[in-house]
Length: 121
Image (cartoon, rainbow, N blue to C red):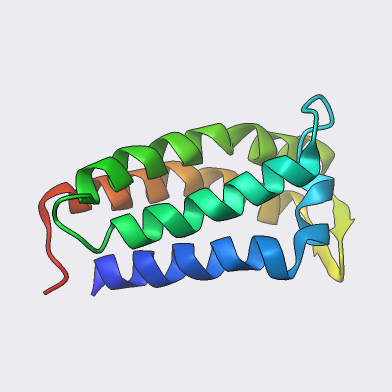
């Protein structure tokens, strides 16, 4: 069940990069060029890694890729902490929310790492 939640969660999040890209542009660090491309790549990688989690053969690659992707997202979450409070669409990102998101990154890394040898059953 845990693996299924990860697969659905990363698929949904990846698709959201295409459905609602404007919500991601403000949190991409300003020192990174091409925020539109970065957003597209983030969405593609989230979807691809989610699909790769399904198969035993590709799961180890998906796990390592997802962990690296989450590490690459750390500057986004650190920036959110530094800039909180701020508006992100209709949501006000408070310092608490920003810290919670940043703290969630290592938890997600450990969660996905736990599935290096699990099955969908």
